[in-house]
Length: 75
Image (cartoon, rainbow, N blue to C red; front, side):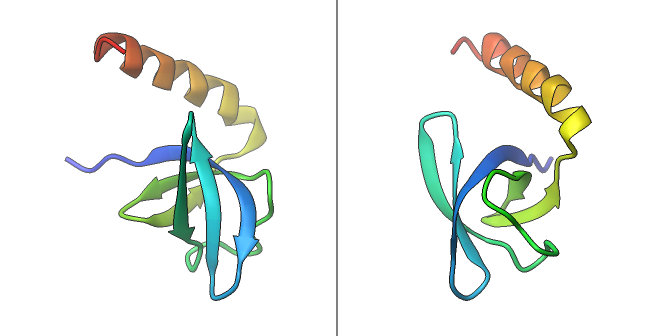
């Protein structure tokens, strides 16, 4: 099963890369698959690639789902 994790873009870097955060974790990811990524965008990340931008109206529901995943995982 594949799992994409929501991250917020915090810095755009050269060569289709960006820094992104998920909770307290900060990672460098690829943005090749996004059109016009912007700092502040919430994106789904899988395998080090931002694969999809999360629309503003879906962000609250997604955050709630991730809280449930963490609760079930005992975090």
